[in-house]
Amino acid sequence: MPVWDWSVFFHNLVHPSIVAGLWTTVWLTLVTLLLAIVLGTIVALVGRIDSLATRWFYQGYVAFFRATPLLVQLVFLYSALPQMGIHLSVIEAAIIGLMLSESPYVAEIVRSSISAIPVAQWEASKAIGMRPVPIMRRIIAPQALRIAVPPLGNEFVRQLKNTSLVSVISMTELFRATDNLMQTNFRVLEALTVATIYYLALTAIWTILQSAFERRNSRWSVDTGKTVKAGAAS
Image (cartoon, rainbow, N blue to C red):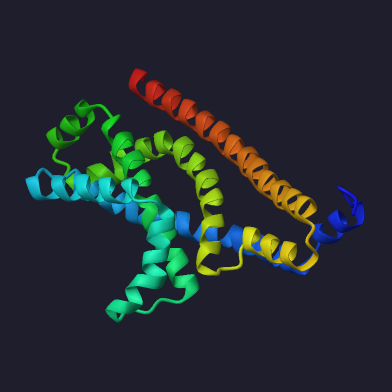
């Protein structure tokens, strides 16, 4: 048997199961990351409440989900919860597991981005009679978002790689589709090369999109700053 077979490689490259697994990896990454951003933002805002209980909640939440492996969380959701009367489908367990595992990292990004905004802006907004919610929505959040965009973009790549772990609970994403194909034709090298190429391609595409968005965001920030200074000067 030859070490490398180009015909097998090209056959695997467009194999329906690989293409379907690739699509599953893409939508699973996007959906779970968006859900993690929503959940992580809520956790970060709760953690900013000046209360001992909320601080303990925040620290405990972040510590627990960052300290336990995603693989353990996925197996627990899919295999252990049924013994407690809670039955999740493969897709439900995968989405919940990936969301919970990613949310503490998002929470830390959101918390640090909000903390990076000078306290003077809070104080000045309160001095002119603004309430906390409008201050957060109109003054703090837009600035914090620009700070959070680069690290949140990096989390996409991490989440993309994490999706390969849902294969352990029998969800057929890119890696499991590749593994199934290997079990069929026993051509490991070609199959894994195809999977690697697709992972690299997804990462490269996202990196290009993220860089373009950051450049646009940077230009918007500069233009906004010039507008504010011009208004102050007049």
